[in-house]
Amino acid sequence: MVQKEGDRYRVIDGQQRLTTIFLITQFLEGKSHFKIAYQTRPQSVEFLESIDQQNSEQTTNIDFYHFVKAYPLAP
Image 1 (cartoon, rainbow, N blue to C red):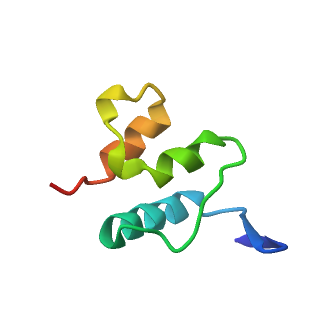
Image 2 (tube, rainbow, N blue to C red):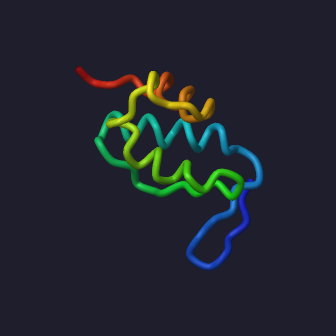
Image 3 (spheres, helix red, strand yellow):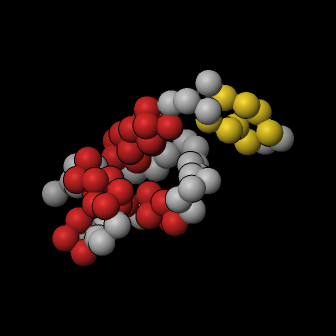
C-alpha cells in the first residue's frame, strides 16, 4: 500500500518486501531501479547503496548486520 507524494511514493505496508526486491535487483544487476529511504533509519539509504562493499563482522547496527547476511556476496 502506497501514497504518492510528488515524485516519491510513501510505502505504508510492504517495506520488507520492497527491501527484499531492492537487494535482489542490486545483486543480480549490480544496480537497483529505485532508491529506498527509511524515515526511521536515514543511514540505511547509504548502507544499502554500498551493500556489496559491506562486511557483517564490522557492522555494529543489528539491522545492517542482517542486511549483509541476507545479501549473498558474489565471489
